[in-house]
Structures are given as C-alpha cells and as structure tokens.
Length: 124
Image (cartoon, rainbow, N blue to C red; front, side, top):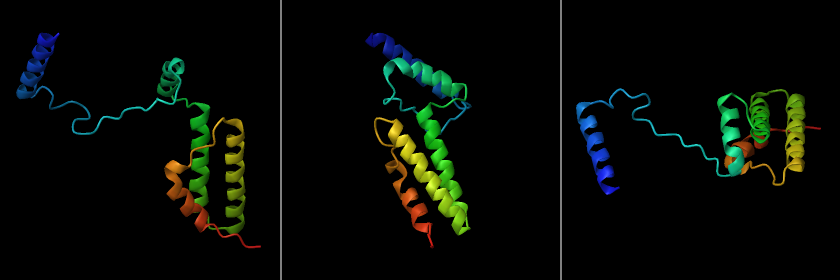
C-alpha cells in the first residue's frame, strides 16, 4: 500500500509541475465541507439528494423563514408594522420550539438577533 501511495504522490507532483492543475475551477478558494453530523446516518443520502434538487429539510426551511422575517424587521420603519413583525417572529419561533425536541438554535447568530430586537421600539 505504501508503494501505491508513493507512486500516486509522484504523479500528482509531476502533473503540478506541468501545470495541469492551473485551470481547475475554484482554484485558490477553500473547499466547502457540508456538516451533516447532526443528520442521522440513514437520512444523509436522502437529505443530500433533496438539497441537490433544491429542496430543504423542514428544519432548515423554518430557519430560513425566520431569517427572512428578521431581515424584513430590520428594514421596517413603521412602528406598528415592526411590532406586528416582532409578534409574527415570536410566534414562528414558539411554534418551531414546540414541534422540535430541542429549541431552535439562534445562538449561532445571536449578535444579529440582539441588534434587531434592540432596534425595535414599542410605543403604547
């Protein structure tokens, strides 16, 4: 096995010297690895196929809807509309938390969420 690895490495080095890898798409950019460690092993292939077809798992679709609502909230100037949007956002998060075994993870973007909430002024 060691000899095979050595031969493969030598051929790769020779190809690099000849410039055969210079025009590879994405050259110089980092590889994007998909973290599917939270997806059960038996569902990973199905999730990958759905992702490649443009579909999202329900959990990701819900998170996407929440992000859209947060973006809309940030751009609103009208006080009443902002208040309605905050109520809608809270309802969405509550419904998701009730349907899941674990609460929605807003901590990965907690700073953004906090900034949006701080901008909302509720006047009565």
